[in-house]
Length: 303
Picture 1 (tube, rainbow, N blue to C red):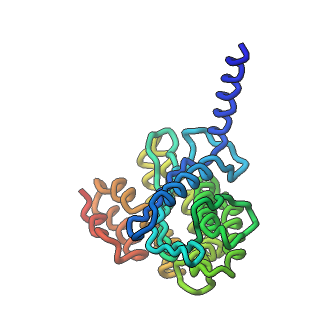
Picture 2: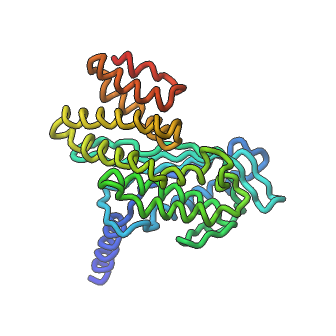
Picture 3: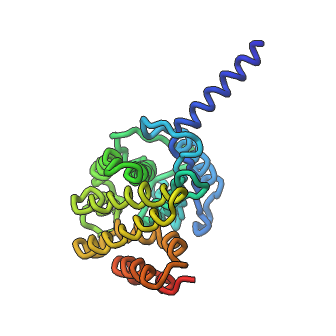
């Protein structure tokens, strides 16, 4: 009887954890380009990161298992130096998606590549993160926590107008605390697409309109399509017009480019069978923001 009771308690506690956890996180550490380094070290890092991010609680909200946000981190390590404190240099790819109401479809929220990423890691190093306590030796965790908060900000924005503000503020605090580090991604005005610039733009008052687009596009567009496809598509088309206006006010702002890069395939699939005028509206908005995007012409051509 005691064994049955303990099993039941374990099951209930496991269910509570799965309901509370916000992220369904996949992490890959790719060190194929690093010569002469034990790949076991990176496998251990990959496992430790996955354990942390799939058990850590980031919000007070309760997520059902099917409501969790899918997040994928891929670390590409280009250089490793044991002589320099285990310094690792490479690139980080971050993608995230959320479920669409009343469907089995998940919509992409964020797709970004951080090309200036350095951190220190040696075998056996602890993997931990404490909110509000930046530690230069834990730059890896600070960077990942920064992007988790960006993703959570967009997720909550997609459900209520500017609903993700507190998470963008947390990302901004991480950026401010990390500015003294050697990682160029945190440096003010170093690049227009580094972490400092990214969060500065998301917090810019002029970008509040983009964050409202996340709400209108997702909650009033995608989330109503199961009941009224045309109504949802009309709302999304309306948002593309607003994006063009934002482009004029803030030319080539990185968050705008992230939005259209993330949504490109989705927009194509939504409107590829519509008439030429509608496809032109979508194309014009995307082309104004990201004119060099690969295969952009297919938005015009449809199917």
